[in-house]
Image 1: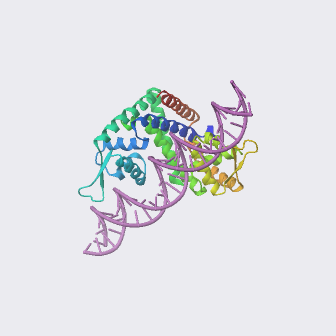
Image 2: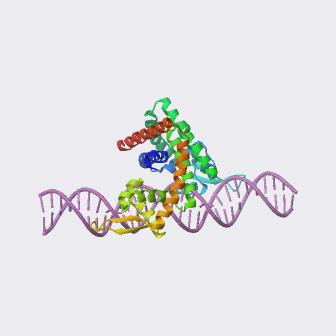
Image 3: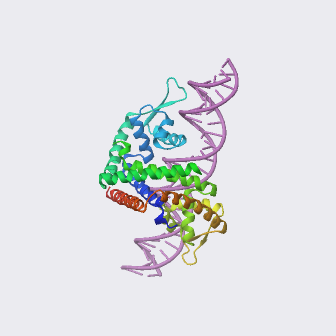
Length: 145
Length: 145
DNA sequence: GAACCTAAGTTAGAGCTCTAATATCCGTCA
DNA sequence: TGACGGATATTAGAGCTCTAACTTAGGTTC
């Protein structure tokens, strides 16, 4: 089966271009794409647990732990024990973290706007719909085997 | 900017589903997605250089070197010095490598067929076209900044 | 109250990925 | 002939990602 017929190949190429561009625009802000994702969800959900953050970012707990350790070493986040659930750590942005997040977000949003500007409303909806059906069929395929 | 409006988020979700499913179906074959990609291009281009293979796989030379070292340790590939260009190593599948590749390919193609079966011809073309335009605008955006 | 289940956090180990730097070889050009 | 430029290969180091396993805390059920 030739690569050009594989939808997966086209999906991968688009994702690679997205990652390469996002990594390039985020570099001046001093964060990786994964770190930006964590900071973004953290800014919208102050005090969230690491496990919940992992679910939002679409990664596993050990992965988010790696990312948070790097952010904590740089003083961009802080983790404090939860009052009642002593097994939980509340994670929050620090003031420097909020600054870095604002800078990185502005840069990332610029990419998203450029990407969105390429398409008409109908095309965007079509793309989102087709991608959603990809997820559906792939998840179903994985569960069945 | 909410995540649901970001085309990049939808792209990432689809790519994550693709990777998760491919990793799951390839696991019984004993190879990772990256290793399968290398074996596939290697089977179609016997004796190719590592640098050329890296370009086909869409990764950097150090990355393909990591992957090839793992494959070589398991005896699935062999690297021999080029006759004239003494700086180049010719990389080839071994017999066990060909067997693993055939098994893995059958499994991967099953996923691609299931994915393709979800869409009509027109939908597939539309998706490929839209993804191609994503790559174009993202590459342009990266070059300009 | 005790056993159990669920969830959170963490550690260990393997693998992929990049950038930066280095070494080597080949070809070309002055 | 000798210097330079381009390509290949490799190493070092940082970071992301997963699975597997372990520890701990909290709530539920008997």
